[in-house]
Length: 197
Image (cartoon, rainbow, N blue to C red; front, side, top):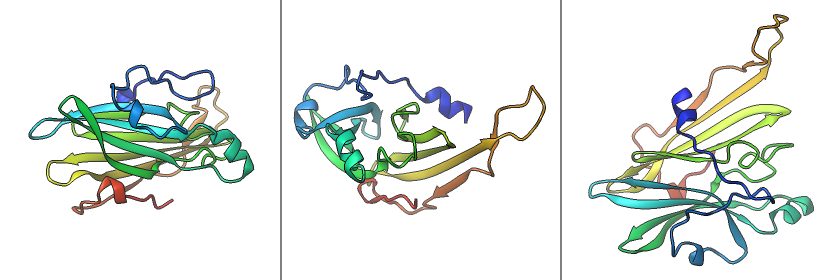
């Protein structure tokens, strides 16, 4: 887990809680729906031959008002691929980035590290909460040269308050072993993946 945490980059957050987009490549912003804004993004450069991708998490601009009126709207995760000097959308999944109300009292994407981590052919989206309940869900996809981005694994970890009276004890302890889901040889495309939650 330390390796994964070391990979996770800090995001720039604006005053309204939405991640700023200072390094979003030119041409992508103009392709986003007008009523959405960027929560976070990351780049992947991998493959044979080498390809470049931008992974972009989006939220509706009126998400807070809509969440208070009922259920929170989906947060699309869109993959753009560089095609020469331009980027073209090649896939979208509305189930990877958790909705604002899927964390109980916390926003599972923004109240944590709000990160999309990348390494080589892989990218991981982190969702989690640390208010009331304590859990983290890491969803990882990898680039397959023939099939594009496919599901690699989903890892969920939970913690609970430590009942130890030792003043030097950790405040939280693991609440059971991590749960890991893998496809075991199947190639589930990014666009078709759905969480078991």
